[in-house]
Length: 251
Image (cartoon, rainbow, N blue to C red; front, side, top):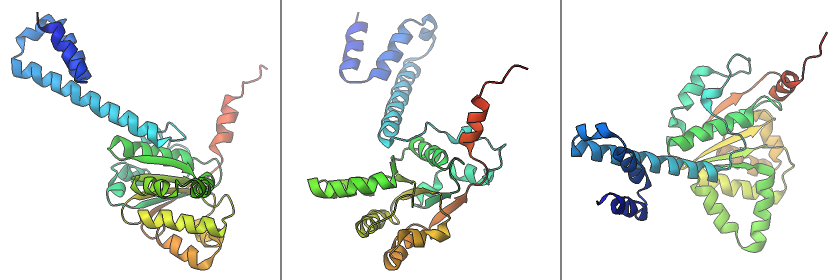
């Protein structure tokens, strides 16, 4: 008699997991064999699981990852310079806990962005927040934010994001304003958050790419020295996938 009012109250209180589990228990005759504590435990477990899933979905949605990538899907059969033991170690997300960075370099198409998104996705699954941004577009957004008053809020958002992906580092020429903005971002995150950088340029060329020697020293000091460095090699995975997708011609 109290069943339906109880379900309604659970829904009103937003205990949707418990409500779903209780409805399932009502339709399971064998559930009476369990004690009250066991049945309650099942309800609480379902609620906790659903809340965890909702939080994860929210983190992934806010992360705006370019690829729906997962570390478990990495194909190690193609030689790209990937160290399987290192990737498995990074999967534990200790680097995020210790606020270390990851620098991914290599030619276009070898999977730098995909790997960065996979690492960020794993961090989201472990409870960390993440955000994917292309560096050229971010720097444009910073300039716009200065004009409309959003600059401090944008800096604060970047500063508190646990894992920040800066994709296409060095792809666009940096102006003096860009260099100052980049230093502001990295200074706020240094030692407190983790940054993932992808670039077609080898790390030893980043100093020249940044331009100004003094600011280049300051920027690189905040991102390179406390970072894992992964240099991917090999042919473009995009070209390989395109070839595989081509239909075979009948003989």
